[in-house]
Length: 452
Image (cartoon, rainbow, N blue to C red; front, side, top):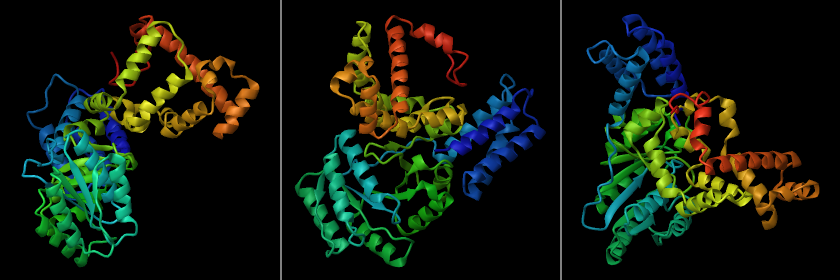
């Protein structure tokens, strides 16, 4: 997300380096570049104008310090304006009501409402420790009810059954009554979408809203639709008392225009962003952290939170003790590390949060992708337990068998063996206290923002 915007803004800031201070002329050039970057990211025109005007006012005013470079000044100004335009602070769900707190999910067909319902149910049950029930009122889309039932089973929350021949209003009322009897804390209602905004859909969801009096009405929108996302959200906001927006498919959106436009156009906060297909890939929207990502400064806070939540600390400690004792780093250990990476959203998600990662060459980014990680796991899974433990025994015939079993070439096996050997050496150095020495050696190779 924000790849193209980050790259363009990064070039603009680079152009200001070597100049003594911000002047009318260099600010004029920089603002033109920022405007083009925002328009290319599909940010809505009124939002672009508002941002540029605010940045110009701050840049030529008293807020620019003489002790910092023009590039640093512009970064600070742009960062502050991005945070303000996206909402300044994250806004959580209002669940402090008499249970069950009803959350109504609205949006167009294909926006990811049903998947987001499952993700939100998991987040509330795991992080908030709430007893969650979900129900589908989508009686039009084939298998919509079955899809939510499966997702509810996957994330371990209660599913209220419904049938395609029932009316959405009857389903919603029955689910609400059942949620009360079961002492559920939260009832999430998945509604039907349409391919476009139409009166019939709006009337139906307005009726549901009046009958349930939800504490939260969330508009789910595909971020890849760009400024259309903000326009659609505004239309829904005029028909429904929306309390917030959920941006989905942000992992496939390199532009990020929707995230910058929605708040201004609708006046409603973005509460969550969906960044992947996995059920755990729903993040609370933090404007300050997103602004930091856009400017290529990463999002270390979110990365640390993710590590604390998703990394298997017992496995990590076990591996650390093993290395300290001088034991071998096996293929099983390598597979565990790769599976941990995938559980955290994969390499694209990790790179997105690392400071300076936006400055890495495309060739480097392309080498560390989730497809390669999954292929490596498949190769290791095709080995016998003995081969995983003692990879040195893997020679000609064994390589051919493993290649056939995992659907790769023998040279891919050779490449993995080489990588594993290099990682084994690195692990031994780290175990002997060589971590600081290694990082000092890498100092000149690290991307900007990752130096020690």
